Image 1 (cartoon, helix red, strand yellow):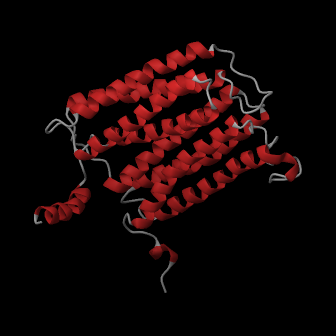
Image 2 (cartoon, one colour):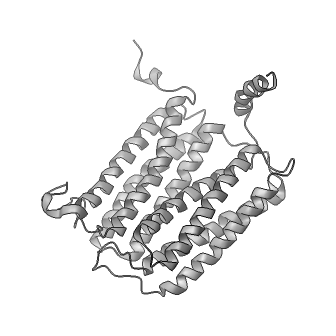
Image 3 (cartoon, helix red, strand yellow):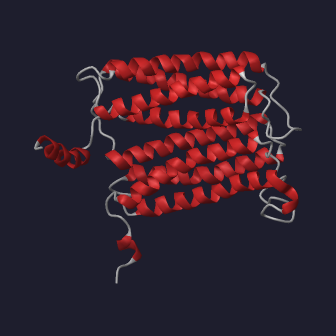
Length: 316
């Protein structure tokens, strides 16, 4: 009879890949549900924490629509926890061969209770905009880490050689830095706007109109850098194909993101547009993170796995 240990993956198999994908998708999804909580005014749908009410861990009929939205967001945290535990167990046997997967699974797992605690503080402080912003920032950090884990699962451990030329690497660092500024200013801008999560919650008191411009400027720089990288990376021998795919995907998302940003700024910040804007920011971060990792060479394992496909294609 097989032991439980022997049933765990000895190499990165389809189970590890499925859970790695699930980790990234769920981290982005909870940003969407968290945005729905704020944009529907359901931030205090469950007025206390960790219980939903003083007497119940779950929403009650008296709490209505807002209670359902807030409790649904809390419930998704448990799904993330299940995914995190499952991923940790699946890479446990790989901890010596692939220590980076083991470490990332631990950090992602610890991030989930961290998010729950910050979410609880958010409720207990009556949706303080700075705490709400911290909640979103931690979500973005977890999205980036989940993107790193997924990339490592798909391509193997980190190697020392560069596959992208130095101009791409320099522009890539500028892209990551500028995107970080854009996201940070975006969080502060949201804290000054009308979507507080509850009608009685405070705002950060900053000039929302001015902050929208401060948020737009680095966003345009990000777009310009993405266009430049998308063009430069396609020159012969400048960057590998996987980098080109990641940066092209990031450019597509950024174009939609800028369009939605302009739409919401000129139409009174409609709730749906703001929610989409929040989710796309996470998707963009994941793709930019992937592009940064793609600047390095492939591992021997990845090269060996891709060679049969290339040989088969060349023989047709």
